[in-house]
Length: 471
Image (cartoon, rainbow, N blue to C red; front, side):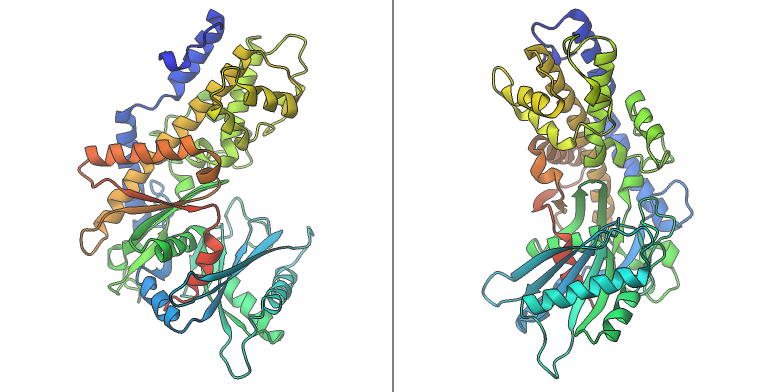
C-alpha cells in the first residue's frame, strides 16, 4: 500500500484492511486506456443500432451544432425565451426565462414550482398544473407578449431518455427504469402545447430535449467551442455532436441525409452493462444487487453522486463487522441504514487539520459517534479512495468521448468539454482528478489535451430556453 493510506497509530489489522480496499479500488493507467477505448467502441455500436447490446443507447437529437448561430440571431432582437425542466419523479418543475440584451449579460430569471404529490396523477393533470405555473411565471416577471406579438418560445427538458421524432416532438422512452409512470411514453411538447393552447397561454413549446443536450446548448452559449457536455450529478451522462450522415441507425431519413452535426444523448450511465472492462469490486456488486435496477446503469453506480456515499458506507460497515473501527460501546446502528452516508459528506476528505475535526464533527452530528483520531483517518481515507477511483473512471470515459467527438468535427478544433452538476461544486478533488486524468490520457493517445469549462450545477433549464431557438 502506498504511504498515502498508511495510518500512523492504526493497528496492523486496520491498515491491512485499508490496504486491501485501496488495492481493489486502484485504477491503473493501462486500465484507463481500456476504458477510454471501450467507451469509444460503445458509442460507435450505439450509433449503429438501438438493439446493439454492446453499445450505449446514443439517442439522436434534432438539436444541431449550428444552434449557436440561431442564438446569435435571437440576440440581435433582444427577444425572450423560456425553458422548463421537469424532474424524473414528476414532483417539481423549474422555469427559467432568458432575455438577450445587446452589449450586456443575458437577463435571467429562475423559479421552482412543486407539483402535487399524487400517486394517481394523470398526464393531463400534471401538464395542467405545469401550465398554471408557466402562467404564474410569465405574469410575475412581466413577460406576457403584447397583443399581436408571437407567443414566447419555450424549450422543455427532462433527465430521462427521449426518443425525438421531430425538432419539437419526442416521447419519454417507456422502459426507462427511473421514469415515473405518469411520464412514460409521454410526448412532452405535443401534450404541453395542447394544454397551453386550451388555456390561451401565449407560449409555444418548440423543443423537447434530455437534460444533457440542453446542458450542452447552455455551455455553447458561454463557451462557443463546446463539443461535449458532461453531467456529474445524482447520475451521470454525456452528450456530443456527431455527423448525421455517419449515424447508421438514421440512414435514409431526412435528418440522416443532411450535412448537419446533431447532438447525441449517449446515456453514458449505462456504459459497462455488457462489458467487464469496469472491473467492479465486491462492494459495487453488493450495491448493484440491492438496487431496484440490478444489472443496469453500471457506470453510474461507480461514479455518480447517488451512489458514492453508499459505497463508502458499505466499506465502513465492513470495518465495523471486523471490529476495526469505532468504540465497542458506540451506537453504530445508523450506519446500518442504506444511503445514510450522503455523498455530500465526502467533502470531509478535504479536512487537512491535525485532528480531522471536520470528520469528527460530522460523525458526531450525523451518526452520534465520538470517533477516535484513527477512526477519523480511516473514514477520510475511504472517502478519498472511492472518490479518486470514480474521478479516474470518468476521466477515462471523457477521453473516449473526446476521440469520438474529434472524429465528427468538420475541421480540427480543440476538444472543449463543459462539465455541469452537483459534484462540480461539492467535491473539488474529484473534479480536479477527473480533468487531470483526461488530459494525461489524451496526451498519451495522440489526442490534443481537452479544454475543460465548469458550467456549474444547473445549466439545463437555461439550456432548454436556448434550445427553443433551434431551427
